[in-house]
Amino acid sequence: MSQNKKDADVIIIGSGVMGGLLATQLSGAGKSVIIVEAGPRVTRQQIVDRFRNSPFKMSLTNMKLQGVGSPYPDLPYVPSTYGDYLQQMGPVKYPTKYLRVVGGTTWHFGSALWRMIPNDFKLQSLYGHGRDWPLDYDELEPWYCAAEYALGVSGVDGQDESGHGGHAWPPRSRPFPMPGLPTSYMFDRLSELLGKGGYHPVLEPNGRATRPWGNRPVCAGNNNCNPVCPIGAKYDGSMHIDQAERLGATLLDNSVVYKIEADEQGRITRIWYKKPDASEHSLSADLFIVAAYGIESPKLLLMSTSEKYPNGIANSSDQVGRNLMGHTGISMNFMMAEDVWPGQGPTELLVYLNHRDGEFRKKFPSYKIKVRNTVPTADYASELLSKGVLGSELDEQLRTLSARSLNFAIDFETLPLAQNRVVPSKSKTDAIGIPLPEISYSVTDYWQAGKEEGLKDFANFAQLLGGKILKIDTGYQDRQHIMGTTIMGDDPATSVVNADCRTHDHPNLYIAGTSVMPSASCMNPTLTGAALTLRLADHLLKTVLV
Image (cartoon, rainbow, N blue to C red; front, side, top):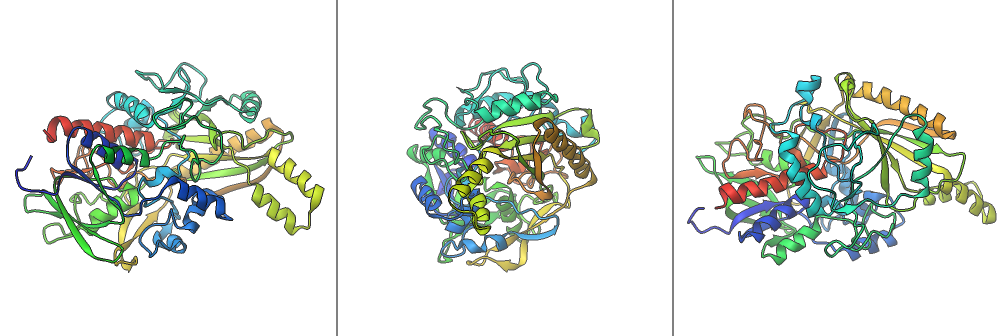
């Protein structure tokens, strides 16, 4: 460690789950840590109250309109500008959603916490697409275990998560911290009907408590995981931020980092941030970690230009901001011929993974099919009222629609493509003069081939369930799973960070989160990001912060 006076041993940019995990581990080991967060501190009660008082009850839509989830800093967090914040440059829209608040995006997430499987780490060598990781599943497996215990994951031990109804998969060295959630009648009935077509039900590992876990109560099945668990049974990043502060970490909220400075030797020396009044401030440390998620992290690095680094920090490879991935999907609205009563329990639990892995990945991507356990009662009521349906007839129709309507959504694996990228805008800024992010995104014929296979599954589902397809949406739906923009690899010419998440260009700059992932698989990336982050914390404490 340097003997020069610094503001902290470590500065972490971003207070989401990755920043919180790092701050907890490093503060707990006695290191001085400052967490710098762009957005405000919010409380669960504030979010719950906004949800209850809002006429909009759809996930982030509500949070956006109420001001909690809007990208800062359109004063005073004016939510109506959210749609303009992410500049879509095409050819396919990437209208992702994330939160710039203390605790980050996991405030609203559905809490799916999946492991990747071994073959996901070797996509190029096995199937000829994408990239291989510079580490394999076995190297990350102990950290998957650590992440499951750190986040408090409930799941079904012995389940075959390959989707083929065989032996337990993937390999694991420890059981889940908590048993899985109980299934509802809808889950059981769908499993019975779809099982006749060879579709094996898989119950999602998730961050909901099934027994008291820390300060978290048992999941009460509020069916409100998006936008927020009202009782705190679901994990979110604010929990680790709270823990880090108790251990001595300092949190600076409403502080937007806009520049990272490096000296002539490549060491990062200082970061600069702005407050809501546009005042400028700086901090120094021995070690810096960027944990601002997959849009803001590369934007910050690319904004940090200088005479020595004209293309930005950590960008000698020209890979910063490139290789943007996300689970671009399609969906089907379906009306059952019988009552199955969705809306009981969590918003998502049942998935089908028949196309999670296999030789088919040479021709089309892996994908999962998830059953969305929500009921759009307000939408149905509005439509019926507009048609003049009132009284007992309204009640009866609402009951039928609510008891029988289902939504199936497919998440497709996407590939790391150089043309899919994030860059800071050269012409548009936010309220305090910081460039907006520009996003260019596309899908390939590989993805299109996957879509055709997914449509076959939708047709099979309709036949097996015996109901009616109301609508199929093939319009490139975004699943808010941002990956790849500071990609990991062994070769500094083609990647941003190494296997330890250290930037190739700067010995004291690390990047934490899903943006370092070289492949997307078809599974929610949060647990993989958390496993990589805990592995990073261990590396720092054993080899760097000594």
